[in-house]
Image (cartoon, rainbow, N blue to C red):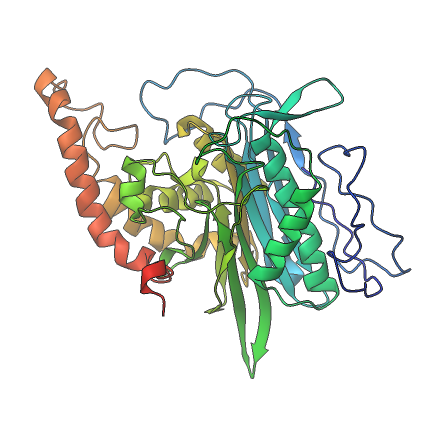
Length: 435
């Protein structure tokens, strides 16, 4: 994971392309994990704390303790990365989790997490290359491995977001969705592409989702708050999590269906996503939120393969309570998502305003108890390993198995009815509802 970035101050750049980058195409195309070389920066000390090196492992994951769907096939070694930094002085805990479903074929880019010390602002973002519309190979790595348009698109979007945040933070640019879109277009125009004579409404060049959450710590009199700016395109999501309110979504999927439960039951096409060959938009809005709180961004490998929207929050909090450190929390999340997802999965988390990991964990204990009572203990018998009393009483009959889909659907509808109001507190209005 490339999360070591030098956000040093630079001289202002003239108007035109994104500052610090030549308008000429990059030739040859650099290795995908490296950004195009900028002009030499002005001598200045780094303004961002350097996080520890990411923890990287290619060993076979341990069998998770829970959340594994019944009948899941055993898997061999799966590429994975976790990264954590726990800075008590700042009240900042940050981590990211990234896994590939198929080794070497993952189309999620590494999550991007950065914090700018001088201006008290940061960002967390995830990128999910759209393999359906960008499955054609467009680039060959030095080792001879070919990469799809979705793979390249996600990593170019990450690169563009990195450069955009540098100028937002270090050079005082506003964190506007329009400027992020301009950076994305600039980098995508210079990325490797392979034009095809085959065209269609679903085909895209370098397609990827993006879900970013820009935040700034502000002090109003004696209060400390967060200015939040969710920025997104596609169906990856941004969230805020607090003990009293639970998990609240800050983005609305760019699909014709926006009901979170219905999206678990269907897979509608996206109406907007980042790509190189068509117009796209970066959606955005502003919120003010009290501290302390937890921020998260995730691709659908995390939230798209659970039984109910509440399951994603329960996963985050259950693994939090089982962990003794931030690193262990990230690793437990990684093991659990690998057990149930059928996709690549990326997650970035930033917790602000807590007095260390123990304080963070203690604050959410009551919330997890409530989630367990409402959404775990009420699960239909036979649904999964979290279902109660799966090993007690008489064995289920064939009639029980035949009735399970109907019982699951009724349970989903009931639990979503009680969970939805809190979850959608900050859901952006649908396009047709906007003034």
